[in-house]
Image (cartoon, rainbow over all chains, first blue to last red; front, side, top):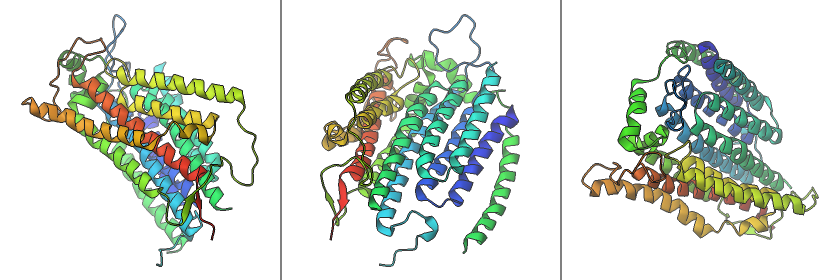
Length: 115
Length: 80
Length: 252
């Protein structure tokens, strides 16, 4: 189980970076970057999980609730998800403007601005 | 039982993440990315993280695919 | 360097990264065995100390409130960056909106879809407000509720057309909401300084756990963060929609 959880984290991160490096389209690149970012969220939550634990919300619990999972990791991951989406939007806005100026979305075909 | 659910969710996230990267056409990739976002929300829920799953559902299935599609529409229109 | 050399270099680097990741991740405690001592302590103490039942909200807005301030400002600067990047440039003009690429002809949205979009949009606004205000009781809070509120705008656009949704995104209101949210957080933090404690400490009356008004500054911070996130994501949507539907390159 540890191997599966941390293996999925490492796999998603590496495949996201592979997608960024071998991408031929800026919009495809940005979405691959968001895949790599989600790997870090999964790592945070996997570290904070306790077997048999319940969510750290202490309302309407059963008679013998087990331990609660880590709430600090969830606090970190939750702001990360929302801010990650805003940064993805920023990168997409950059891609749109690059296309307006250079006429292409291929990273290999982009050259430094001349003027 | 819950460990099995977490294992299934992890595998689902890994497979759909790979599919997102391997889908080279950005238009199809937007839909696969929405599916990946939903898989992630399921994984977060099975890891007992309700707050994070709430954000991920809305962000990953609505916000990100929408702005990707709007950028694609803009780029395609410019190409005319 | 050529693409092939770049890919070869990347292959070597990613192999080294994979080895490092493997060694690092193998050194972590096994999955599901324990949680950090800090979190264990907070799970026990948060309900008594802050009178809230959702410990994640207490951590986000009280125990680690300063981190949330920085995250909020990252969001603010990302949205400001998008507004700057997608501003109408000198060689562009704003024309009547068209919702489709010129080479496609799609029928206008049917009345059933329109009704469904408006109904879902209203439901999402209600759900968003409920999530924002109940952050200290159940999973929810400013971030989640703010994104749900903004997604009402997206759903309305998807089921109707640009002209309808333009009425619901007045730029001054969205920018005011975004700015109020960001500065409101700082002002509530300053309340702590004015009361003689440190910045962002919980100085308002705490209330009873399990009721709507509990947790002191936590529901107030939920409200301002909800305002900020909703305003930010609505600005994001309106900038992209403007670009797609309205702004055109000026024909020479």
